[in-house]
Image (cartoon, rainbow, N blue to C red; front, side, top):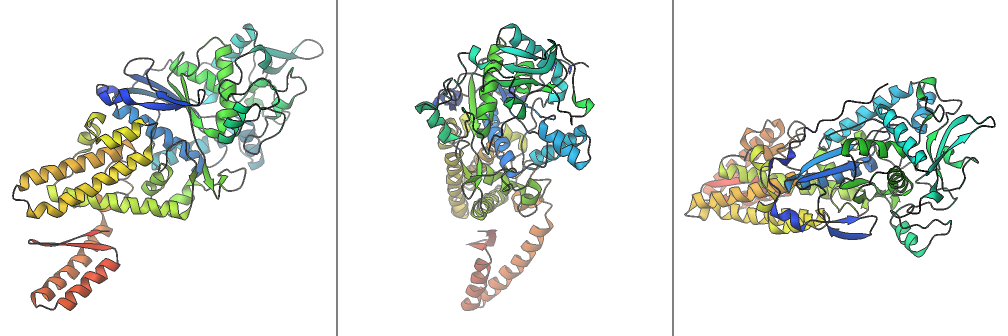
Length: 543
């Protein structure tokens, strides 16, 4: 067995020079509990590792919220002109995968691959950019074994042996040997929580005592009586009797498979080398996963991430959305009732550290936002006679975007403020459109409308929401926003029906039958159609 070929970075997102706006970027760090200025380790480059899915079953909205949140973080770095290396792993071997595959009569690797593809499809449908690298845990066993050897050699892990002195396959991290344990979540090496850990507990789950947690069930391997300390955790695990033979690997410390935490340490080091800029993931991973990951990486002699960022949960009636709690909404089920653009907007509608309450109202607000966005983009494109190309939109530097949008994104990726800036620009653009026919300097007026259109689409693109980008165009989510060239049968049919009503209204006005004209206008208005009258005639748009 060999590892994958040494990676070659093919990311081309650094084509632009780093924007001046980058100097103002501030991000929260879980370890310091503070927002601070971001300075890249390597000038012009950013390395990000985000914990991906454990592919045991279908993705739900709670899973995808983290993916969307860090996709927006990545896109802002790219808009600032950084060259981004983005790594998102796949956990394709795990107790749940093995147990659920056996119960379903599947091979474990078959089940993992089926659901890995479902996650990939969900990411794609919701406009999440593909990672630079997406390594699987099973492809990096040698990396993990080598890392465990280093931790053992450095005196921070121990091999459990049987009565004859033979290794059993169980290897545990020796928490007592590592005085820095607890620095990420501000927990001391004690079974009693202190004031600092109580603060972090309020932000998310943290299990620093012997109790279980409904969000972080204890790994059976971590309950072993062979541990020296209750807080020690598994680096390598002896197989269960029920584990298939092809889910076991031979090592100097016995046959078994990796503990949950070791894979991310091995893969982040493999693809991003020593200290990298950002390690991300969902808030529920903060403890124990990321605390343990930080400890074992540093205990092996490597630097850990310079900054840790965690996205908050999606909640339903105040409770974390989770399969284990029975309140998860599968991505296919949600997309069957709502467009992918609307779902992505809803998932990214609040700042990544804020809990997101999932409800019909959340989705209704997202649909309303889409209608306003599409309406402006369609009307503006028609007014200037074209839609700016995707190449033009993607080339817009952060320095060229409205100041209120830049300030919001630089404020720890405050997407709520950024969205407000977008709709401020749309209101201004609509005002320009309403006055366009009265402007004598029509070329200048059209240029102003075009500038507003470019700004709106570039801001939306930074959030992954430009309706004229993929995947929205191919999926039909762009609707009328694509303008005259849109291949939308629904839009064409609606345009024909409304145009007939406008023609009838024009005849009524010509005949001075104003009651009839007003009745047609009111009926269209009640159906959600806005009418604009000007000397050249009447035009319509969705409200």
